[in-house]
Amino acid sequence: MMNKLLILGSAAGILCVSGAGEAQGFGIVPHANVAVYGSYMDQNDSQAGVDPGGGGAGIQVGLSLTPNFFIGGSYQYNYLTQSNGPGSAVGLAGGSVDYGEKIDQGRVGGGMVIHLPAAPLNLFGKVEYVHYDYQLVHVNSAGTDYGNLDRSNNDGVGFHVGVQTRFPGFSVYGSTGYLQLNNSQGPEFNVGFEMPMAPLTWGFVEYRYDDLHNTNSYYFDRTETDDVRAGVRMTF
Image (cartoon, rainbow, N blue to C red):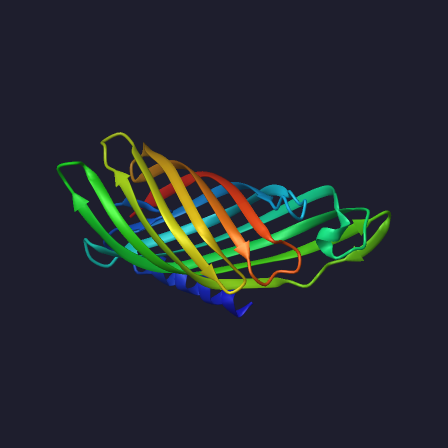
């Protein structure tokens, strides 16, 4: 709970200090900005035999401190479900299991952007604190209700480098990075597209892929996550 409050408080503080411009969602847009979006997430661990999926929503905020330095934060919640999953994935001796999974993600960080006017491109690097937690809920096997399992926290740091095009009518951006969390680690890739919808308003679509090898997880050995987002980003 304290991690979540820290993330939300930091993100709100960034938004309230309106001013220059920023990069968030790995897209570089002028001025302070806030984005709201919907998400569809799918997780897969082939070794454990789990493949839950489901929807969610999130918010991103950001601000430029100077033309070359920015800060930003984000929070996202998803609720995933799986039917007829392997009971062994949740610690049962056998049989199949139905369950839901609550996932919270929060990030706060900052970085540097280099503008290449002749390209036109922006190159950027970013470091962020990452909070990730999940909880398996409504676990049911063969008519027996096992209730909710303990929540698992997974915190650490993420490092990213990327590029964004700057054209008058649209922008394409992408990044590659690595997450080093206390229970897992692995690469992360992000690509996105945004275009203006109205004055100071951009529509965007993003795809993020994580391939995390879990070092201290009872339920999952290797978690591959596909996350598709679509939303609106407003600049100030």
